[in-house]
Amino acid sequence: MKRILWIALLQVFLVMVFTTNVNAQERRSFYSGARCLGMGGACIAVANDETALLVNPAGLGKLRDFYGTIFDPELEFGYQTQGFYGDKSFSNPFTLEDVLASLDKKRSAYYHAKAQVFPSFVGRNFGIGLYGNYLLDAEVAGDGSTVSTYYRSDMAFVLGFNFRLFDGRVKLGFNTKLVNRIEVDNPTLSTAGPLGYDAIASEGVGLSTDVGVILTAPWKFLPTLSAVVRDVGGTTFDKASGIRMSTTGRPNMIKQDVDVATALFPIHTNYVRSAWTVEYRGLLTSQDEPDKAKLLHAGMEFNFGDVFFMRAGYNQRYWTAGLEIASERFQWQLASYGEEVGTVDLPKEDRRYTMKFAYRF
Picture 1: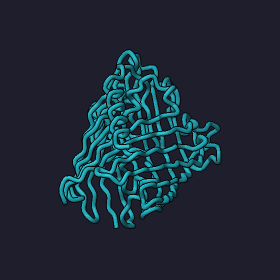
Picture 2: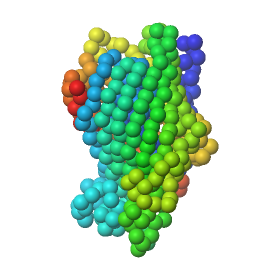
Picture 3: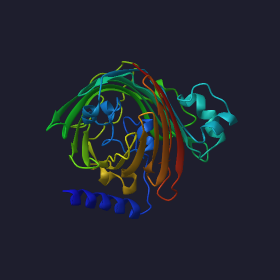
Picture 4: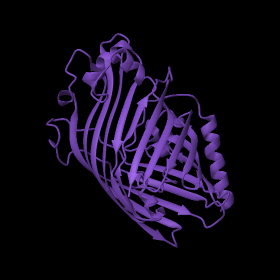
């Protein structure tokens, strides 16, 4: 069994190294946090805090105690955001109407801004939380006539459970998410037309479920295999409408998908341990993605006494890094990662920076 796990890790690494350099549109997940982004976006096999409720509900079985997160704002901006604001200031970084003048001054430059919060209460095998986010990705065409726009605003109630089997070697978890989503997904939105979200966005309510499993062998380094089935049966946003906006359109359907990962957890000293993981996303929808390298993620984390954390990884050919300082009540996280936002002929990295502060009890 050990030999099979090592061979699987080697095969994934070779695929990651030798995948050809092609490209596709940006892939966006429902949730991504600073810890995972610092580790190359690889998280389903290592999640062991409140984010497991969204990332992999089977990770709730790794929690040691009950705790609540009261306040945890997380902000993320692309490296060009400061330049956009310097050329033409704006008041709301998530409103297309406000930032369009800045985008027009830097045509063909990619704009990215995201903010999210996730107050929650979690314990071993159970979690409940409220998730909210704002996300805006935009780029004005070279001639200034159109603006490629993706906007998302989610408000979600999340409930998760986990079952520990065989002394915790098998963890089986699931969550249920009731999501109200406002979305704009238009690569050729006219800059001369209406740009208010009440005119260009779609809105609706969807109910989705993720199911996750974590298998851990009782050997040195705790070799682990994990998988998450996301949006079981597909998620449509037609359960209700008019909650935050009145519109006849509905957000895009989310297809059912599967993410898989493997991980190792060496213990180096009494105060130092680490996590190493490789993850493949989109097993069921990979045929829609011409750039298979975008589905591969890898990362590592060094934990020094549960107080200081150092992270690094690989995300879509680009490096990632992260730091964390934690105490019993407070948590500060920083991360940087690269995202592929170009075209097949002209690949382009968007370097991003994420900051998170959390207060727990």
